[in-house]
Image (cartoon, rainbow, N blue to C red; front, side):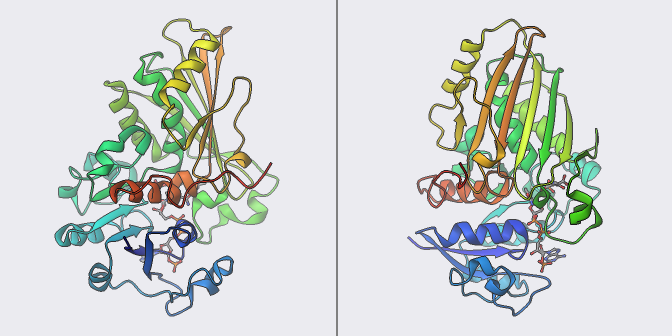
Length: 347
Ligand SMILES: NC(=O)C1=CN([C@@H]2O[C@H](COP(=O)(O)OP(=O)(O)OC[C@H]3O[C@@H](n4cnc5c(N)ncnc54)[C@H](OP(=O)(O)O)[C@@H]3O)[C@@H](O)[C@H]2O)C=CC1
Ligand SMILES: CC(=O)N[C@@H](CCC(=O)OP(=O)(O)O)C(=O)O
């Protein structure tokens, strides 16, 4: 099998990470990489770490041609730009995996309220599938439009799913305290991601108003079978890659450490990418850097009656491009870990 693939927005951080991962995919054939700013430049000149791994020339998007050439289109554009692509791809029966937020929220009114953009493809919201395979694998397998999850939601939902599925916590007590590396903000220049603003600094941002809040609540609500409200606070870490989320929730009734550890191990026993760490070992971002793993460490705080889950991912891999390739593998009936297997580089 050779899957013909176009990446729209390939010159951004998640686009380039898709190129890196798909360069090692035995069934993938990259046919087009689009850009806004680097038209007609060899892709490897934009990203020299991919020298000799990719020979394509970055091109301006010509949607009709991309659709003619491709079986699967990855969209790695800022939110608001995936809708015309998805509409045309649906008409042509092509698979779209959108790394942005345009198809993650089921209700267009919620999208418009949080993203301040009019939803131009409301008719597709019913067919889009939220691409978090560990929670939603069967639906992903039948999807032609996959809404790849946000980076923070991936880390938070995987931390909370075993607790909500087993009705172990008070649904109004959840606090998600997340820290992200700067590549989460994309490659575009902005004051907030200048070296001297980020280096030797650490700060919270968008407290109580971050756009990932409704996405997290929507998906947790589906797992719990009832409405879930969370407090979510993102922070900016002075590193390039990685998200570490510390998630707190009140236990509905007391549980012992061994019991909760067993519940997590059991919930994720068949999952290749989620690693529930042995008791007493807590996730670190460097253990997942460059990988599609989500590492989890769960602790019962018997003194406060809370459970604390630590979750670590690489925002560009499990938080974006790795998960997108995982979704493509599922849609195409390939082993889920194709091109994604392997541990992190660091000790
Ligand atoms: N970074 C991350 O960790 C994560 C990002 N996401 C989402 O993935 C998407 C891509 O993010 P990321 O790669 O970080 O973003 P970047 O800003 O790094 O890249 C954006 C890409 O889109 C292109 N582009 C920007 N504006 C336009 C436009 N108006 N028309 C055509 N092309 C355009 C850029 O082209 P050029 O390079 O030529 O300027 C670039 O190729 C976003 O929706 C983001 O929210 C999701 C999860 C995690
Ligand atoms: C560090 C950092 O700035 N992170 C970004 C993550 C956003 C993102 O990727 O979100 P969507 O795909 O939902 O647009 C942020 O907080 O806005």
